[in-house]
Image 1 (cartoon, rainbow, N blue to C red):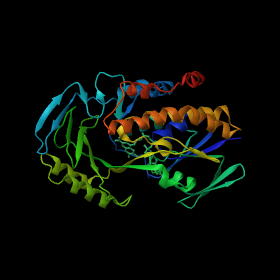
Image 2 (cartoon, protein in one colour; image 1 turned 90 degrees about the vertical axis):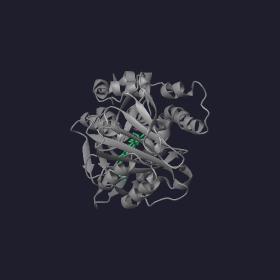
Image 3 (cartoon, protein in one colour; image 1 turned 135 degrees about the vertical axis):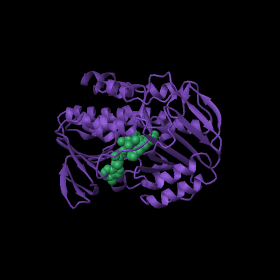
Length: 376
Ligand SMILES: Cc1cc2nc3c(=O)[nH]c(=O)nc-3n(C[C@H](O)[C@H](O)[C@H](O)COP(=O)(O)OP(=O)(O)OC[C@H]3O[C@@H](n4cnc5c(N)ncnc54)[C@H](O)[C@@H]3O)c2cc1C
């Protein structure tokens, strides 16, 4: 019988899962490696059926109020001169007349965090270092030196999940590196950019810049091909140096962005990868969100997949609290076709071929009717 659950990671997947597990009566603890609530990140999208999940959490109106309000975008050349502009779409959100909700990742996480009851235990600044199954439980060792026992451990710790590395042993075959880095950082809005996106794309590097919701900060993302040269994960100084070198030769405001990047502590460097695993669970450990099936930011669907996956996993655990195999099988059976459709869409897009209806199918390609009725 599952009673107490440990979730590793307080991102979208971890927080949404904690919400649904707590609602279903499970004792829920989240351990987050960051020492405090993690700010930063660019805009992410809630699309299709994920909007129904957010509605079922009672958060749709609040999410809508946090919607980004960019009115269009300018394409720039390498000197920062405008070559094209549009008010019909933005780079990050796509068409501005769609029902999707684009909001900042940290705003969504804050919203999810605020929806948690005080029964959910949050532990910041710690992480799992070892897992050992003991009969019907898992003994978890933490970096802090603490040890605790849980009935179930969930890895919601992102694309480079520590839980996955510790427990599933086949990291090399499941991480499909896409050969692209996306670095995201926050700077003061020293160019007074208001409700507008600036975008530049070239062979060597591309960037997108837009203001935060209150227009006081800029959220900058810089993307480039890795060309086989990696920098050690966690080495922020080396990562910043790599971004700076890739931006050399770009004019306009780029040198000033790079200078501001050196001073910010809101910096996120991600070597884009897709995670394709044959199974998302083993014994009493299961994965959710990017840890299980990252489709990559190219899909624009990572947050929606995380929100949907959290609901599906929590409801299947609630349906089968004394039969983990049944819960995990039902979780995978429902989620896997939806995940694959979104992951395959990235491959098709990168090869320049998208069947006409694939975008619509990937937005709506899962039926949550019975689960949403259960939680209504
Ligand atoms: C800081 C940040 C900024 C991002 N910005 C963007 C963006 O601009 N655009 C975009 O498309 N996607 C972005 N993403 C990824 C996006 O949030 C996810 O693709 C999507 O929301 C699915 O979320 P997730 O909860 O599965 O993973 P994530 O959002 O990656 O969350 C994972 C969480 O686990 C925590 N964690 C990591 N390792 C450990 C560990 N060992 N122990 C405990 N906790 C751990 C992380 O700090 C994080 O809070 C960002 C992710 C992060 C962490």
